[in-house]
Length: 309
Length: 309
Image (cartoon, rainbow over all chains, first blue to last red; front, side, top):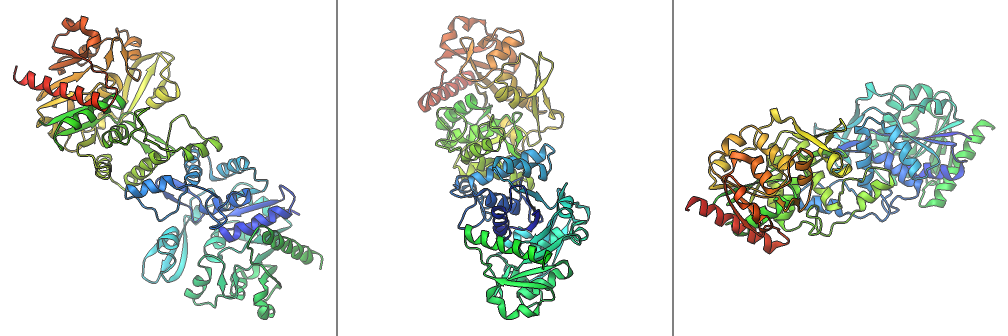
């Protein structure tokens, strides 16, 4: 069963990794948000691409979900001695990824090409592609009047400023990565991973071509909000800042008619009848490799059930 | 006694460090070649500036003369896993220098400003300045018809191609770093360190302003060629490729009327009468910190002797 997953960082990577466990090699394509990408120390950093790749390669740091397992921090410690900025965590082996990506992109390779090559090195059987090869940058509009770049808001300001909206700089000149729309057209279903709807999935949907193409396959989403909270990240706070109850229902309404099915946590069972679309409940909190496999299997069974009720 | 030293990498750094031992803090200014600077992995790398700074800070790798003492190579090892280029050695802590330099220069600081700030962090009492804040790149013209960038020639091709000349791309738009000419004007003497005349000292002299200003102070040079060989680097081979005997005399003739005095090794004592300028001989091979101090003291005594014969 050919599946396309749309994913952001840690939460999305978990379900994508689960799907890679239960699908035959090559049947999974993961289209990853790149609107968090930024230039730091002159290096092209793609946090969500790296998190998805490291997770699927089985080399991600288990505690954080991002970065590499057992990495060292000699470079950052010396940057600190030079009074350089250390707010963005950079392990030594992680820096190698950024250096080599930057070198290849400066030589004219696209982010898609670099990502494909890295996936081969890391022996990843699924296809991981950036949402676009063009530069798109999420800007977070805050009530203090300032627009913050995503990393500024997320890492430096620790998501404290109150959000009043988002914009995606460069989105009008962005196109889906080569093969991305074809993958969606030929997929039996598209899975929207439990990633942040505002800053992980919306940027993907805002690239021209995706939203129109998503009409073709069955689309199911897994709620990133469980019992009013997110496992990780500011999605719940963003719903609140923007005037919505931070619930699974709010997520389903956010995606609207895009969805054919929705999966919520069993902690939210009391709202199961509030959804305008087919919705099932289960334990969707993914704590480890087995959980990820279990939730991924649940997603596939749900899709089969939608196709053959 | 205010002294300005002109230096390239390892050889120049040794004498500069010796001079910093024997001169009062603040009396030494080192003007460093930057025509070897290059962009690698998107990072601004200044090999000679770093070698001089690390050496004067007492943190240089003693075995190589370049790079940092007891550095690790986790980043480069992971770059190698990604099939990235590893021909240019980059230790982890050394990478921090390049990252932070690149970050600051991308933010608009000049190489002079970054170097000054790093020298403060490393507690270097001498003033170290790049020859220029503009981009200059040594191109090595070879008999095989190709022009090689300096690092390509030096590190990648291991100095094997036969040299037929050099050019310094960007030199026509380069100006001495702020304060460099004033330092020369107010110096009691300028010392040309035992660096490569063709690719370390010539680029400095080619920046408009230096050669004219060097008429003012006493200028002495220490030969980088001892008994037909260089301690390190391709200077002797370059003299040969270009049709000259690789001798201390050839070096003195290369600098020509710029020089007021010249210091050769005692192994070359038989040619002491062949020089058109005041020349003394001694053991100028600098094997360690004491040697560097000894040769530096010799240079200062020689300058005093020229001033008060």
